[in-house]
Image (cartoon, rainbow over all chains, first blue to last red; front, side):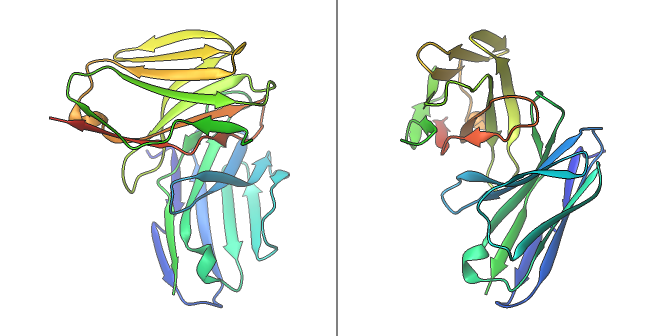
Length: 111
Length: 111
């Protein structure tokens, strides 16, 4: 009965590959987010969707493309992976002004 | 000046100590304030959520918000080794807005 679940948990891939990370929430929230956590543990917003509509798109390379097929799902596709993309990617969800809940993270390593 | 500044760490205290963790912010539009705890290789876990100024207590944890000084604090009483983790402050302006995080502080509670 995990609230926010991400797959995969670990992802090791070569430079230049394309990969996707999936996120699902069963909390009934209307807003979902992707955050990137760097090696120094700093969490930075990448994207946010509200009711399947993109509402936040921070300065992120075009190689990153989010997709929200419905309110409960938010996926992240990354093209042409680079070494600098190595990080932990967190999905989160919230409802209006309420607190946000995070998934367990996807640890991406680009070699 | 960063939007959210968090006291740098790491912080090491003996078991039973009172711990004070602090964040300051520059954006006066922030209204919703959160503290997250993150264990190694896990997702951020919500500890406390407060709206506007005031105090909120939950067990050994007390969150304090002073909007006039743009300052928030988390107090941990009778700290335990299980409290050893990274603590992140986060805040948002309103409904569906992004969470802006502090850099996090790593706390170690020595038995």
